[in-house]
Image 1 (cartoon, rainbow, N blue to C red):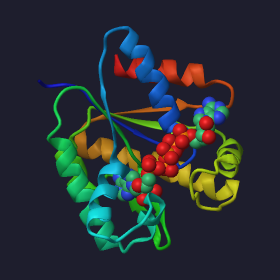
Image 2: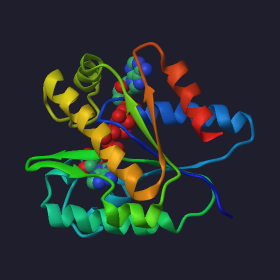
Image 3: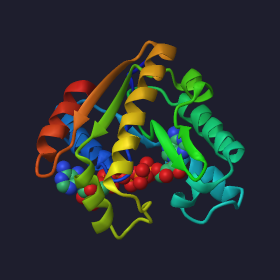
Image 4: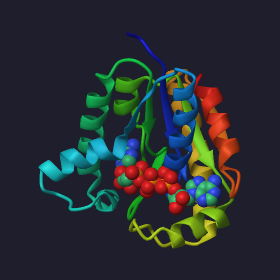
Length: 190
Ligand code: AP5
């Protein structure tokens, strides 16, 4: 069955997984189903099987060639899934050697998304969410650096639209306004 392929991105801690879960709950109550996939989990399963990382936050420090191989394998596995698919991933990943494209040509060619969503909010809110989330080993960076990353994601998303013809939608996930961001995402997915 041919379905919609939607990619959702945002800097770590912006709350994309939270927004996805809320939006999918809404859609389910209307009888609209999506398979929700986490790109990082697909990469992590390969990396764990090859014994190269112990936790998912270590992946962004791996050598570029290794990350590329993991991306390629994750992209190929996801491309085989049919129906409506929502893929939670990153427009770009901040590595010790600079920004790495999260959706390079060899991944986009496999997935060919219909829409790429950028989840954003104020840099200070992201900083606070990272500081209070004890379940993850988040990068320690200031709000100026978070702002640069969000700006870079908008730029690289434009390149993804040029390569695939997909549309780009920006959704704001502000503090105390989760309901609104989930409703915006549900509109995109309907
Ligand atoms: P991934 O699993 O995507 O990890 P992540 O970036 O840390 O994303 P999370 O899902 O943990 O954070 P989130 O932004 O969704 O926030 P959350 O909903 O938890 O990726 C892991 C790794 O995989 C990457 O680091 C990378 O190495 C690799 N990877 C993935 N894709 C890749 C690719 N394409 N190429 C290369 N590598 C790739 O929320 C955060 C907090 O905010 C929570 O405490 C939540 O309660 C709170 N919150 C959320 N919304 C609100 C709100 N509206 N108001 C107040 N608080 C809120």
